Image (tube, rainbow, N blue to C red):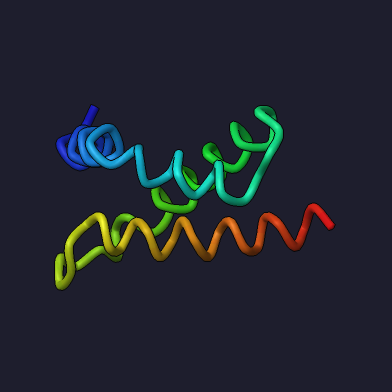
Length: 77
């Protein structure tokens, strides 16, 4: 595992509460929450190389999680 991957996993572990909170706000069923949690984590991983550190990681994560949840909700309808 590379240091970048390890750093990402540590940050996700530290801030997973944000992802849980948004998943719970947007999805009522446990399976849907789990799917959304996974999708948010995937989207954050894809965007992680572009994280420049100009803001807190938690702020950056929150924006991606929120946008992903909105798109996920629209696709469910």
